[in-house]
Length: 339
Length: 238
Image (tube, rainbow over all chains, first blue to last red; front, side):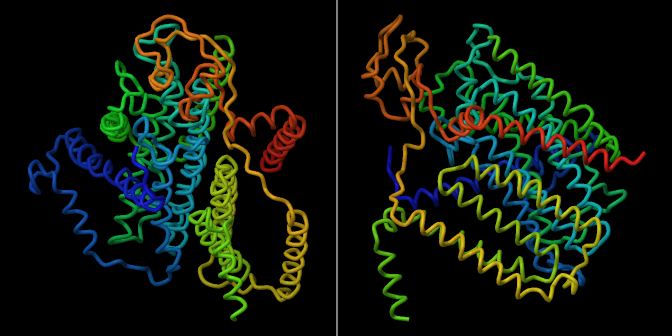
């Protein structure tokens, strides 16, 4: 082990956090939003910029940076300017507790997943700020719809995680991954115990709630373009719109990381010793592969289903997902005590 | 002026300060942001701005909890105050009247009285804190004590770091792990030994809530349930 000074370590951690937030966003947008969406809609998608359109995203980012950063005349300038940063700050706080290997983590918080679920709710504030400060009724309605939806789906998200926490016996993300690596299903420990097998109901609820938290279609009432233009983002342009856009897909990537750490075994793959040093190098790659798998599901549903109506959306959360996740907690608790 | 500088120099060179320099600097930044936001919250002329400044104050207090190593309380602070209460404030304000710009009805003539109450509260709390802790050395207990009961385990089931640290490579079958073995290990290996139980912050809080404070805890739950049902009854007019 190399001992580094506190400040050097902090700088390395900050750079690592920046990479962990921003790096997955690019491939997610290119592979899923550009190519997979085009395939499912029987068109080609970007082809001109770079081989198979791989540089399209860089071209888009360049375009947005060049555009004028417009503030509406009646807008509350300070709040309007700060809103995208609040949304992005929530993503950066989320990535803190994600483990990438046996020793590769930013912070090994004892509270792990609880902290992650707490900070994920900060993005609601950013969205409400954007909706209010834009001084536009489309933005306002979009902001309120977003807040209502995010509050409703936060509950099933938290309750779905409870099952995993009960089974692993810890809130620490690293220990949850280790519990899956060292666990066994009814005495068979060959593939460990990825919680997707024993917590399948929890996984399904988590994925649905995650889709809603990310406001991806079919849960995109807050940005319904046929009614609200783009909801809370309507008045944004240039670099601030880009920040919202990055925030959306970076948060998607980080939620993918959390889902894979909770249900798919995180940085661990069956057949290898979870303590081997190899995982400190391979871990981030394994994580990325699992994130891409989770993202494939998210975008598959995104491009397949039409948008929910507001009342259907609320009913799904309160009348279906929350009771189901409570049942899941009760069953997991009984089985935990019984075995 | 010179007295203030000498005092600052004296404080900055004390061992209590230099031993935890990064923490002290972080605390100073957080406290500064918190004080500024608290002041702006009561002086701003816009309701939404006041709610947002209050959010910064609450976030800073969560940051101080995390800085003190009490991340459960910090996360709860964020979840309850920022994730729920501030969102509810903003939601309520925006659903009713959320005008942009300064609102004359917000600033009140009774500011003088408010300031007086604030100063009095500060003096009372400050005096109580100084009077209580003036001569007490704060003892730092081990934040994560690890309990251990001697046990036997199959070598194949032991995690690799434990095997390496105890020199069990090549052994098979059951081995006995004694107290002396356990004490010879590093803390991060200790927590992986079968029979070891880490009493981290969360476990300590959970232990306290579900044993010593079970009655107040359950009473609070019933109270919240009553409030919830009451809210539904009031909101549903039939």
